[in-house]
Length: 205
Image 1 (tube, rainbow, N blue to C red):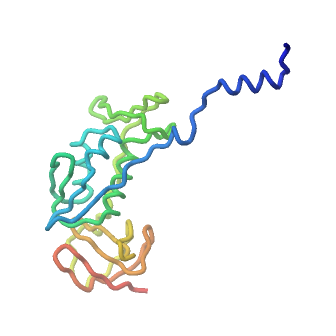
Image 2 (cartoon, rainbow, N blue to C red):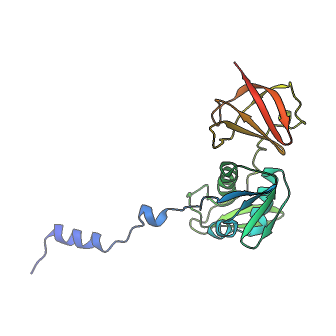
Image 3 (cartoon, one colour):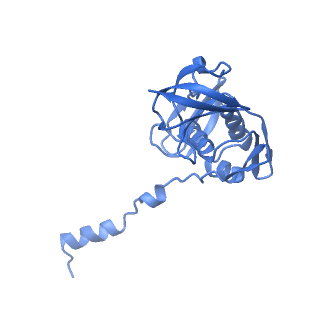
């Protein structure tokens, strides 16, 4: 029996396997964070490092540098000195993924870090692309890096929202809260009170 062109075409298409969006989807586990005394615990640290296929020490060093604190790996967990918001740690991990995991050529996570003549490169096994690892800009500009003082007026840009909906700005080891400010929005504030490493502000219109 002779098959029509349409039947042959349909049969040919059924034999073609194309990657689906589900198969291509790359999902980083959300950070499970809780406060334990004066420390912050990232409960699923090992799971995140495994998903990213990155060395735990490398990921930990990045987290400590961005948080501006000390810490250690404890089994499958990471423990940081100080109290940090879950949203903040998720934001830092996202930045790590953008810089150290995702290929800028094809957008896939099938990459590895290799060192070529003292330059850290991101090598993609999917498309063969490679690029030097970009050094991220510091979360806080150098003008904001000085020790904060009560009464100081400054322009700040929150990186994320707290659970209460306040904008949160990291100033080294300090955490600043800004009412009615959205992430990425630059606002002028006055520091009204500093309690330990927590900075309270008044927004100036």
